[in-house]
Length: 387
Image (cartoon, rainbow, N blue to C red):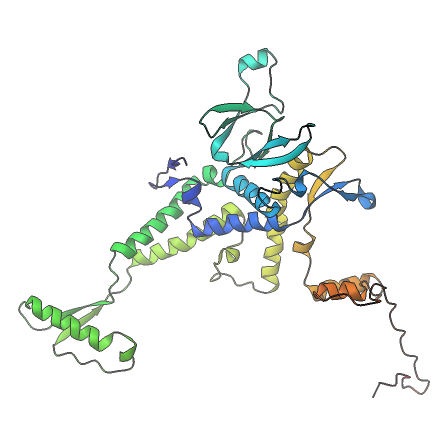
């Protein structure tokens, strides 16, 4: 694996070191894992006439490769970290596309055609070349006929920008903070205080050892909790307090989480920073919906449109966000009942399936709602169960 580029913070930023930061790992895994968990359906037709169809994206890596979830998660990790994901197109003997084998962005790059290729009109299909290093260290150039390419946000329309190359300074600073924290624990002073003798004159080494033994035995450990410490020496104890520099270090570590949240678009509370979160309840719910709308939706649409190009028109690919955006179960059922005039929307067996219960005989019929009890002319009710 390449060592990465040395940043001004003195840290090498690459795929492995970047994911070593807990906030970045959480942000990337949350976005990639959430999108991978959404159904990615293939459709044909439009509006109410559209219907699901089978496609290469039902199992893009084949029965012996990655699962569908793993394949989608890996693709989005490549997109977020490196700004691009790509896959080798696998064809059967008849020339049909039967597989998409993801390739690590570390082993390929994007190149524009040379001036000579423009003059000879020897341009690659898709407009760019994909220069790939094979396992035997040889290099080949492929175009869109054999390679599928998805870029992230780009400044030139060709090369995508990922977290590793765009946020290098912020990631390096976060990694430097991790390194400094580890150094502080391994080499820093972690004592609780200093005990110095009140008497004048130097103590012998054996005296210092005995004083330390007496202090440890008298004040440390659960057995001494609530007890009275007796030391056979006149000592002055000075607590070891946190300096202003140490306090700023802790604050900078918290700020790094906010910085990673900005780069990934993930709210800080989903990166496990909750000390500054004051809008719990509906506020947090709205932030989670914002993640779906303003972050996940953009990544999904970018992927959908590139994926749809691999299917014969008018087929297209779409992520199903319904399960992610729907309200809680009780609210959703209440809304559906209101929209259907209070009529049942599930059969008995469909309702039992929601609760993971087996079907029952006669449970596949949609029942009509029971009629309301007739009013009693004397002001009561005909309902025999009413009290």
